Length: 264
Image (tube, rainbow, N blue to C red; front, side, top):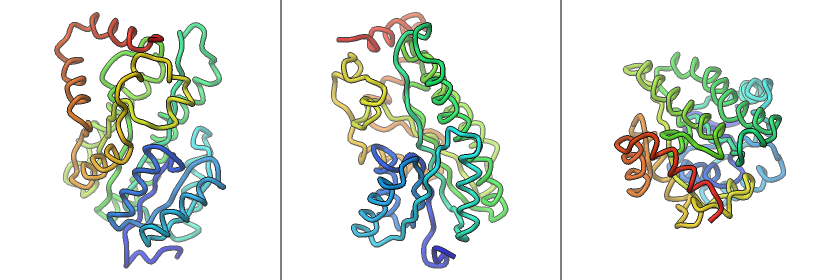
């Protein structure tokens, strides 16, 4: 066995090489979890694993995998089985966005995004949920976004993937009530990560304000997961934004999100 399960619990974090994913891994390490770090680039993962081991004393293994591929989640679980690793907490964080008018955006890029944001998350959850239920214990944290609560002109497909994660997670939370396994969905607002760079969002009005610290988002998210909450929205301004999407006319919400998604 790679880890000594009798000593510490183990958390698997996808998209763990940077941003919110790495912050979540660090927060879990500070809470005493050994780590399995999953992302595409092994060299970066090894650096992150060494950093976390040095700074927190936990064990950290890496599994390079592309979760946008149908085989990705299966490969991860094969590695876990090979090393005898039991996953006590699953954190589905991997994902990215595509910006632009839907008629003009690249279909292959959007297909990859949908496969990663939705299918990879769902498949990995299904593969690891069974063993958790057999043990009668486990925690699952799915990272969505405040985008999950609203339509997203200029990022229509991305917002829709996050709405899927929110709906899927809330449904599982209810299905698993009383089982010893909980599902929490974390919905951060704009956060200071490489997400903006990858999706080319730096020039948008939405990104002109204060961006949240990934460490703060991670701290709130892990605390919510360990408490077994259904939905976690970090920071008051994000909670206010979610509230407004529920009380304002839907037409106004669409137009506001459209305006925020334009150059400013």
